[in-house]
Length: 294
Image 1 (cartoon, rainbow, N blue to C red):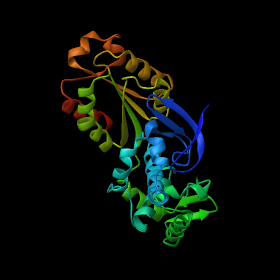
Image 2 (cartoon, rainbow, N blue to C red; image 1 turned 90 degrees about the horizontal axis):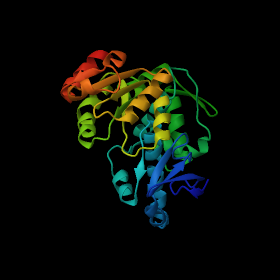
Image 3 (cartoon, rainbow, N blue to C red; image 1 turned 180 degrees about the horizontal axis):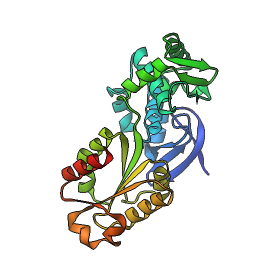
Image 4 (cartoon, helix red, strand yellow; image 1 turned 180 degrees about the vertical axis):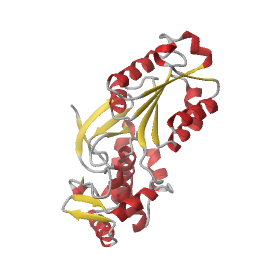
């Protein structure tokens, strides 16, 4: 497999070519995943002046790590970098940066006292959007003195107070991974993203939408295997939706089937076998799903 230098964390890692983009797999920006960079942007980004790299690249690396750690896909080009740096979601103060570390520990633990290993710590200052290890260590010590965390070498634990603080900053509850399978329909995807996905969040899920317009099947299966719930819409009779939802059932992940009333009588399988929720409008479906999940 071809390898390449990640410009943001300066680690040489395997890359996978996908169309006009390269995927950087397992670098310090995304230790357990990958991010994609437009291939034509690579050399212009490497040519940035040194002082620009020193100020900008730690922020981009942290942005990639936070989003991919939350199971979000990150695809970048050179045009995105300045927008990210100026985004209001980027923490600036030490308090805001400390909050990011609390939320990371919260995502990776089951409760107060549950151990989370951060190794290598020397390459993990992007967890707090810090420019260097020294600032990360300062933030860790500050959180420890505030009795929000306990540190033993590279093992960290949230205290009861730290867990409560992290829970408040995360909206009061941990969201469970949920994948929504849709056919290749741009209008339907847009409508579901705007109306239905926020309702799923209110029910305690972190929804990700997968449509099947040339998506990587291997990636989809990996995402599905890590989810807690699948919502599969059979409108338009997408074979890929049937396949992916069937795969989820095969590994004992709950599936909720849905279908627009126009297609309800034309399904490939009998409705008695899957018992889909039949909907007329996305607003109606959102209310029905919220009722079912509550």
